[in-house]
Image (cartoon, helix red, strand yellow):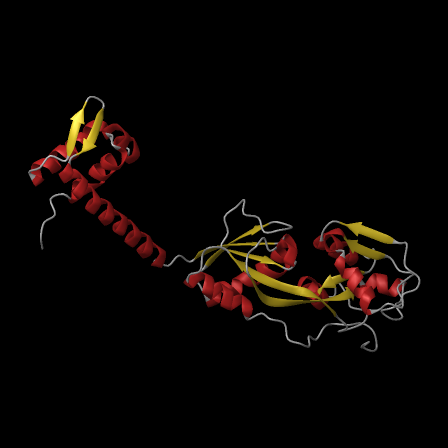
Length: 305
């Protein structure tokens, strides 16, 4: 193997040639000006040629220096690109996922233990934000439902959201429900962050002529779910979030498996697209809800439409 005498000195030479200054090269490389001068003097001695004309407080390349500089710049650029490509191929199993607080709390977090079993090499950090995807903090994948919140990222749909009417057993006993389109005399819990839910319910069941004036408005889905569990009224709730509450009886669905379509969650990839991202994406996509979902119910019959 041919020994490259110039290799240890190339960074100092290239920086000085590009900046036309030994001191500027020193600042860029975080070494002293004297160290840069010694690198270049040694390089000139090894090559047997002068590379710089030196003047008071300034330097400029000789003809030989200009020729050598072009080669040095090309070699260092190619080496930097090779380092970048090799580093990109090193597997990193840590991912940062940005999603809505309720989605993180009631859907994603309860399933991460399963991810650990399937892919023990992956570690998921979860950050939460509301509204449009935020680039203020670093993330690899974002999850959003509202297209207005995609922030220009390409969406990959992966999970359908169905919602249903829920309340507590206590509320249902005290105020029986007749049909999904006759709720005018009931207390409705409105979610400020999801005001589309009741609107979609009424678009499916438009015969509710007696719109209730008894409306409790809360900021977030998890607060509305707690209010319903405490017997304060009825709420239209995504099944994704209240599944556990229904199975344990903390909430009930008066009209059984009667659900309405309320949107689709999408994955939004940032710049990173490696093996870890692909594994996590494939795992998430395995949770797509079936067309028919069996839900707990309390009425003697299931209302269909």
